[in-house]
Amino acid sequence: MHNYESLFILNPELDETAIDNLIDFIQKSMEESGKVKEVNRWGLKRLAYPIKKHNNGFYVLFEYESKPEVISKLKEEWKIKDGMVRFNVIRKK
Image (cartoon, rainbow, N blue to C red; front, side):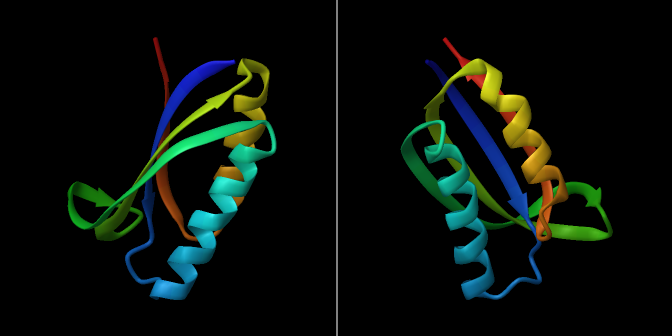
């Protein structure tokens, strides 16, 4: 098991319930193959540059443990999920 950190930028036009559902989806997908240590909701922030015609995004940071071979599967799930603007996965040492 390795430690990972993922930062998600969610669609700012989603309502509170939709954001909660999306965060739950992300957390459950991580927990299937590992353990979520911490979830930090940073809230609505202005983007440095427009992404998918959005100037703002709802930021959420996850810290978790997972097996390395599962990360590519998770990325594929997250790519096709509606409401995701962008995400990044970083392996921590």
